[in-house]
Every structure is written in structure tokens, then in C-alpha cells.
Length: 332
Image 1 (tube, rainbow, N blue to C red):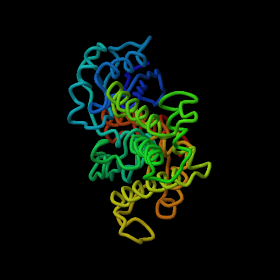
Image 2: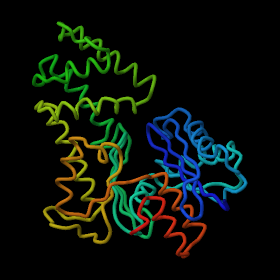
Image 3: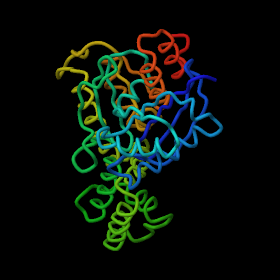
């Protein structure tokens, strides 16, 4: 089989690992829980689990390199290297920004931009396969505008506002109560008792599972928006506006411009909120598609493996061929 290369995409809620050959054939895959150092108690354990799953049945001495795409790459180096050692691999992996492997998982182009909206949210400008500019990605307290956590927090707040009269009536009261407290939780009581139960349950869930748990409410508000609930539509529309603002920053597009001023390369959309058929994705693509060439990420872990092959074979046409094969662009 020859040399093997490892690619890892560690997100807020899941970690995916790909082991690939020099020719771009995928030899193994693994998956585990999230690996974000901010929101996950033990990211190294999940990185190790994903690695071991992907390496099952393979000769670990054949691993010639690896790239880990992780949020907060500087902070993530230690857990990545620990997971690598504990998986029985020699040397150490390269640790890069998660947005870079998302970009490489969509296109073989060296330049462009990427907008991610999953558990968190961030935009980045990529030049020569390096991140040269970022916008947002500041975490759930200070930023991540338009992310799953951002949507979930506002869905819960909208439900509570409707209960105490500060906000308009909305189906989010019943939908959020069902998601947080269980079926039929709202019942006949949509007053103070329900509000207190929701507040206690939300804080308890965040304390137990971390802020990423709020992202589980994102599908609730997105579905309500799709069905026409005005409050939910407002929340999702605001998320779309904020994501588009982030995209404009990293594409170098002045306000009102027809095309990005930064020029060159596609705008990659990544994260489940933008790659799945969500109401949010519809709004974002409708706006950004008028200004940029949009490409959805195919496989960020495969993109990380492609970067590992490119690092091992700099300037070699075989690396470009492997990259195309890994992300499903063999004929490109």
C-alpha cells in the first residue's frame, strides 16, 4: 500500500479522520466526538478515538505524515500531538486552522475564501493554501455570529421573551420546550412555571455538556422559520445577515460591490448549517451567490489528508492528483 497520510477535521461536535494513500485512495475512516479545546473537556481523547478508528487494520509504521485541522490551532497543538503519540504514531502531525482543511476539502485551488457555520462560525481568506485573514470565530460568548450555538441561544431567548411578554408569540415556545424538556412539556402552562423550567434546564445542559449543546436547538428555529413563524424567520434572517457580513470581510468586498475586491478563487461554504438544505443556507447562498463563485465543502478530513500529501510531495503533480481524488474531483 505504501506511505499513508492522516487527515483530521476536529469540529465542535464531531471529529472525522481519514487515512489516505499517496494516490488519494482512502484507506480508513474514523469518527468521534468534538475536539474544540474551548467547548470540549478532553479533545485529545476524541482525537485519539477518531485516529484509532481510521487506522484499524492498517500498518501504523507506514504513516508518513498528518495534518490536523482544529479551531485555535495554537492551543490545539498539545492535544493533537498527545493523541498522535497515544495512537502509536511516530513523529508529530502538523496542526492548522480548521478553516484551512475545510477549504482544501472543497477545492484544489490555492486561493479563495471560506465561510463556516456549524457549531461555531468563522470566515477566512486563503492565499497559497495559508490563512491570511480571519473574521469572527471568537467563541460563543464574544462571536460565532450565525452559528448553531448563536441560533440555539436566540431560539431559547425568543421562547422566553414570548412567555413573559417581551417578545411576540411564537411556535418556538412549544418547540423549544419539547426539545429541552420533552414531548408535551408546554402543555397548558406557557407562563412563569414553564419559563423557570426552561431556564433551569438550559443552564444545566450547558453546564453538563458545554455551550455546544445550544447548537442542538438550531434545527428547531430553522424548521420553524421554514414553516413561516415570524419570530423564527427573524432570527434566521439575522443569522444570515451576520454570516454574509463575515463573508464580505474575508472576500474583501466593499459594501454594495457587485463582485469581491479581493479577487481570485471560490468562496467555500462549510459547516452543516450551510451545506445541508437549511433555511439559513438558502438565505446565505441567495445573497452570496450573486457576488462570488460558491463551492460547498465535500470532505474536510479528506482535505486535511490532501494537505498532508502536498506537504510530503511539494510541487509534485502526484500531490495535486491525490488532492483531486480525495475530494471527488478526479476529472477536474
